[in-house]
Image (cartoon, rainbow, N blue to C red; front, side):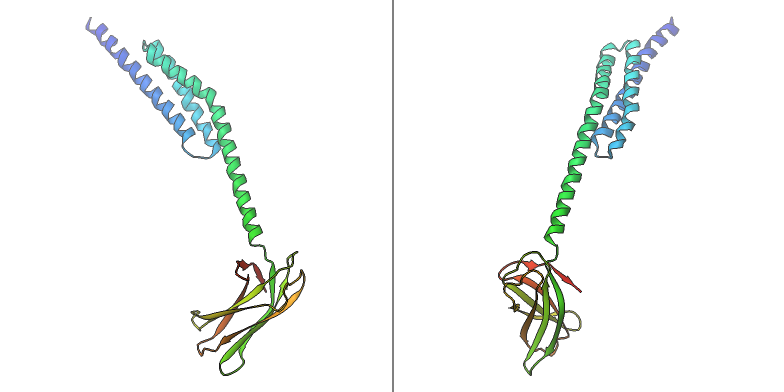
Length: 211
């Protein structure tokens, strides 16, 4: 009699353990789908859903009908939903790639050079002034109006000293044309090097190709 009672009490315990293992497999399977991971990782969720399905059937045969049927229905539903989930993920990934490509295209268009610096130098032209001179070419397909040369002066350590600007000689500068420019600034003994960039009058900087 005692042996019979022992087996009867062990059976519910074992069925409960089976269902617990089934729920663990079910949760792991969904974690592999929900957590942001590469699309191919959905393959790892399939064995967990199958294990959950099998364990639910085992639980039913051990008398845990309600819990077993619940797990069985959810496991079958997950297997059915799995392809839909993968499809949604693949569509979202494709959209993300397209958005990234669009952004890259916008950046490349925005920074496509319109001007090319042909020549540039500067020198002290009097006791009080320095003059920066050069030539710039319009390499775009459109004429550019009110283009300004902005010259910045630095000391030996690369620290900013001063800057000045002036309109280039050709206004507008047509496609393919090369225009001279010159910018005059008050002399400073610390001046060691200079750099030039171009911008629209009261506007944004113009992308420039430097030789």
